[in-house]
Image 1 (cartoon, each protein chain N blue to C red):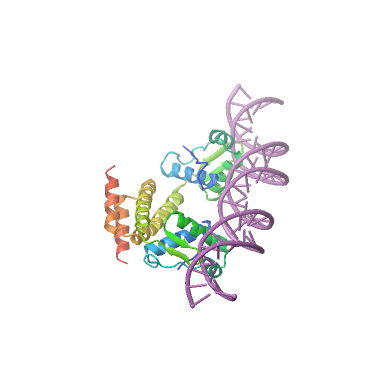
Image 2 (image 1 turned 45 degrees about the horizontal axis):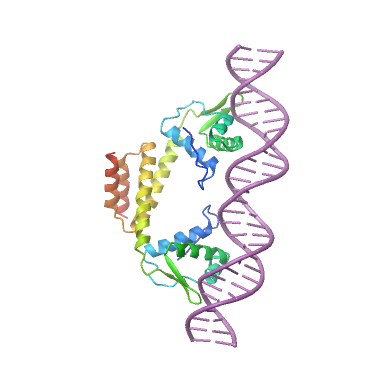
Length: 121
Length: 121
DNA sequence: ACAAGTGTACTATTACATATAGTACACCTA
DNA sequence: TAGGTGTACTATATGTAATAGTACACTTGT
């Protein structure tokens, strides 16, 4: 459910943050569902518990998860802000991608056909 | 022509590499045109000459520029490989973006309309 | 009451990539 | 010859990431 690539340039704690967000967006994690325990996930991913804790703290600061001492960490009840911000990010990414495409001679119609091609799969 | 953001998380030398590539792709830099001198650009960007050198070395290893000791660094004569690899990167980025979009409920038709909207500008 | 599992909070240390500082050399051109 | 160019090298500073280790408070199930 949550995976990390130790060789990646992206910090592990950030990969965990993204991984949790994607799991929520994909419905793999539902609102109020419990996240893996800090120590347990650390063992599973073979990394330090502090790294997991850092990721959870960030997620908590963004109100995407909430933690109850002694019980565990859970997906927030309302994940609509996560969905909204992710939507905004995707659209912003798309705009810079269009600029990138234009720069190397990929037309907008070509982009559209790639998307439609992808839709078939 | 070449700009860097010192506050960015992306290393300066990498920003320079990208900046040069984009300038070439955009036609701001033409084949065989001379790049800014290492020391001069360092002064202009207010960074260390070694950082520029590192960027130029990377560009040279990718055969995007060539350097002549005593003369300067120049855009390669044939930039087709740069164009090709950039095309490949854009298309690969587009595919992950589509996955990201699907994950938060953005349909492919919505993506297409954003692209068409962008085309008007 | 107890033990096990949970989050939380620290400090210290290590590791690594980035960036800078400084110097030196070889080459080209005017 | 002088000034500009790329190149090469060592040393140092810096910041972030990650680990190591410990400790405490809380909840749950037995």
